[in-house]
Length: 365
Image 1 (cartoon, rainbow, N blue to C red):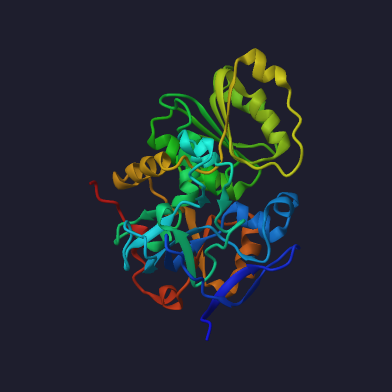
Image 2 (image 1 turned 90 degrees about the vertical axis):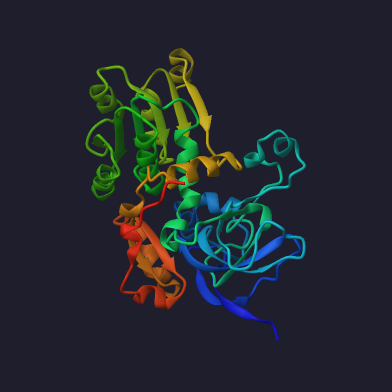
């Protein structure tokens, strides 16, 4: 008899999802089977749940979605040599071919044949998930699953921040969503000067303050570029990290950038963006597109920051749910009045009295 498990499935090409019994995935020779202990909701998952224009043209259905997770290995394929049963792991979400030109020249994060875990391949909002052994990221056994599952989005923040010089520079983080909030912490940890956080949501701006932002701008009540110039002595921001994907905010980011600034773009626009190319050309801006993480340079940078205790992600985790409460969790995400929402995949995790991740510190190794 076929073994089944619970999975949160994007079943139809419309808003919503359904929690249902699905087959336990069968691993290939180069894959591992992971019992998922914790997963987290990403902004991409909200795009999928809402079923916007990006999801319509990108996402494969029906499919278990979700791509941020931590768990324990329960089985390994016959060719797997780098992972063993019982290992605590997370995984890189880009499943790449390894033979196209980008892959062979150190740019596998933009592989021509990429499949994406939880987007175009089955994901982690389920009891079990399968991942390529080559994609496995080992976690220390004492790292709480609630923290370990945040490494995928943290990698996005690390790559965005470290795609150019950051030390001592003025940094504007546009969009204090979850990866934007992580970017604030990463920028401070990596020696940024003044960090300016912008958003239209007062709750998220308060979180930005907790993550280390020096200046908060509510761009629903003041013009973003003008405020950036005011807080940088009229020079503009030397580094602009665009995390919102909002067309107007992107325009304001380019306008508020200093001459010779670096603008790194991670936010996904849901509609066409009109830009004044003069800002790029005559300011001599460097524009960097960010997609996921560099494989696997970004992961090692991130692990280094975590292991030396430079990053405190605890303020980000504001709510935990079991998977059966997914509708409540996604509605909370859509409200914007939350930080990172974690799904705990085993009900006993919700009932543990000693939830010690708030006091967890990474040992220096």
